[in-house]
Length: 445
Image 1: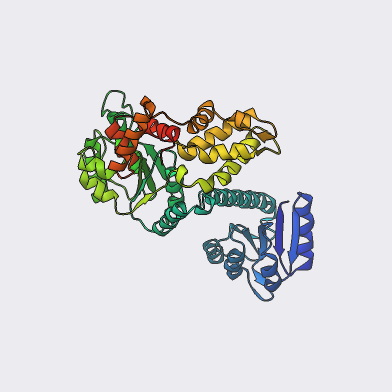
Image 2 (image 1 turned 135 degrees about the vertical axis):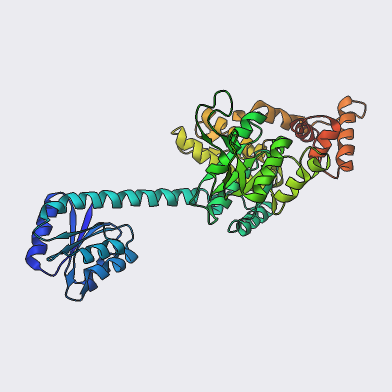
């Protein structure tokens, strides 16, 4: 309901205004003095205030600040018997929407109230959306209470209020972008832009134009000026996912931007300034990459001021039930299914699977299971490879089989690399996903 507060000690005028405004479909609350008005204004339903300048216990122009302090989203219109420019200017400075003269401007009251209510309700909608967004991207919304994961959250909370560059490391699907969003929204830049780019998605040429922008005519097809993401992130946060995929030439240009906060667009000669916070993420070990000259050491040291490593899902098994509940609820709502739950065996399979794709893979598996299920989620709704892996784990391997030799060799290389799976996969010359599948298949621990 659209609600108006009228503050006026003249009973006849206040009653007349009340009848007129109610006839337009508004709810009206009345006050005769400042004291009662300051109590009533705390009602969050109030959208607009009509306030007389001369009150028995105060001045309407001074009242504006007090009313705004208690209800910032309410719009205030001042009424006066004798208008003067100085009072009108001061009223607007104090936060009033408008200042009108009784009698002379009566025909303006309803149009002004309509505008005031629309503005107030729009501000309330924006505030509500901001609250939803803040809740969605807050650290409290991140699901996970296992030890290593809580440590990562605590580190992220501590660095969030600063402007320090953050390097998020961890396997694909561990939630690096979720952490980046939370760090941004908990920072002083939280109300500014969060600009994200996956460096593994584009070629070097496209990456350069996306990051730095270009001037019209810089190359064939550059028909107009384009802002780069670095410029778009000014005063906000730039999130570069999979930064280990960034070509070496662009790494040098990025390093210069981080040191000088300036860059030059393609086809331009004038530098552009951008004050942004950088959050980078990688599923590679950038230290190893820099030692082997696949990543610039100077950029690595510039990024590695504050590194947070996100543990893989197989190392936070205790979080799987909560994650599963969250995804089941989410997809049940999307598919309009009710009373979904999972069997004990279904959860056991989730808790013993290797999850090479981590939380992202779990989300996809749950989505599939929800689509296939009605009521209880059973193991039959899980992908075949999960069921097959579970069956393979129970088998005893012959000492003479190739599988037994392969298992032993993988175990030796894992021991040699001190458990570093990325390094193990490199030495074995196989993909990291293949390594995890074989670790799960052979039950290597």
